[in-house]
Length: 362
Image (cartoon, rainbow, N blue to C red; front, side, top):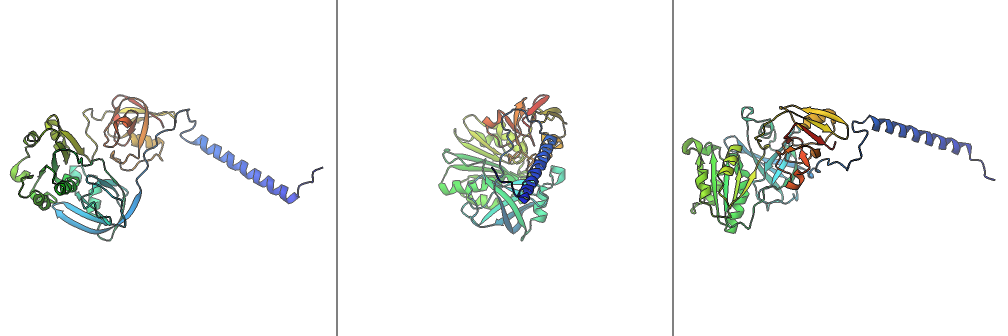
């Protein structure tokens, strides 16, 4: 015959069971109220790439090195290694995230160096460069992510032609140093509005001194660079690296002879011949359909329904907003996804639909 439970123990057990029941009911109500309820029986969605590990670095130098261009020296301890072509994500005081190429010495593990040109609002600036120029002074701390490299220097090419426009010299500069140190066959075509506006001009001219490797073209005195002639003078299998304004990169693409490989570095979404037409997006898991106007983005439309969706740079570079596409043709405008990833996913901050409808796994 079993003994009766102690009244105090029994009372405690009843209270615990009751509390657990209340928690379960509250959780059930919260789940059922979620915009993602009920969940269809689909595979797990792509919820974006994990962000790179964040570092807090100290600004120890803020120096104007050309008209409208400043460099920042960001110091820390045992910083992650990087190779020419790499860039950092800077989280600015306002929360904006912008990408800047590393242009210092890869062997220096105590600091990173970046440079940025002030882009006025009338030229398409959205405030990021102004924050760098006005707020990231000596003594300030800044959060950075990276480094990441999607513009790596190929060491096995028989020759290199570098084409840089203005601030586009920043990812190219470490490449020039590396090519010069290896004794590689290389040339640089460097253009800008004026010589005074072209950063690192003195250094690049010294790197090519006496060998005729560097051609500098200042638009106010020399006009536009002759891209067709520079490209036509390259040997087959030359690796061509280009960074600068969109018009410069498009012109290099158009004039590239066959047999050369082209590498481009962009820090703005790619232009599309399809333009920005309106379309609709179905969020399959939530059962909702949202409209994407011509002057907005998929990210903005989705956030109106799912405000906690992950995103960061809003320029198609970090990959945080990558989402799986179940149906529809994608107009990819990012500079990050691989060809395989483009088959069934997109970065919703910049990419759009080629047709009238997309279906996302959200």
